[in-house]
Length: 60
Image (cartoon, rainbow, N blue to C red):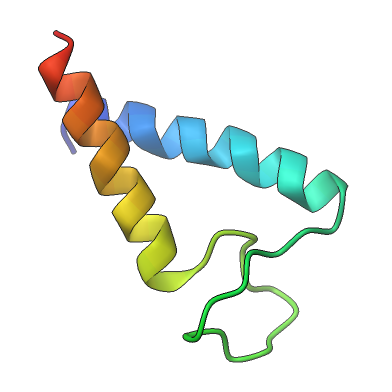
C-alpha cells in the first residue's frame, strides 16, 4: 500500500475514534444497520480516503 494511502487511513481512524467517542455515525444509504458498522461508512469512507490521498500527493 502506498505511503499516502496509509497516512489517509490513519487520519480517518483518528476521526473515527472521535466520532465513536460521541456515538456519532454519519448517515449513509449503504448502511445495513449492523452495530459493528464504522462511523464513516461505505462510499463516504472511500471518497474521504481518496480525497485525503489526493491532497497528500499534491503537497509532497
